[in-house]
Length: 120
Image (cartoon, rainbow, N blue to C red):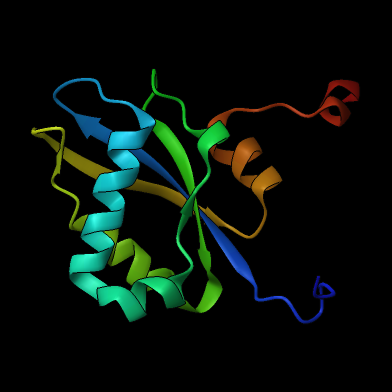
């Protein structure tokens, strides 16, 4: 394993999907992956290091988190704009915000509450 000083920096994109119907995580992940491949190509997609975080996707609220490389953030946001269909349904992916850690993404955009805030 690499020490933290040698690892690449990451950014976490919190998004919301506006759609006509319901779909699951796997279908959305596939649509994001194919949009990224068609826009950036294989080399660009691998450089972006895109990863949807499965346990942070809420299918009821249609919100989730995508991890990417910090210097490729704008490419990933552009690729998300090209996702127009998931399971033959029209969709729009709206970026709610970008953070540097998963904890701040949960707290700021997904409504998670940490135990330290109860004392205030």
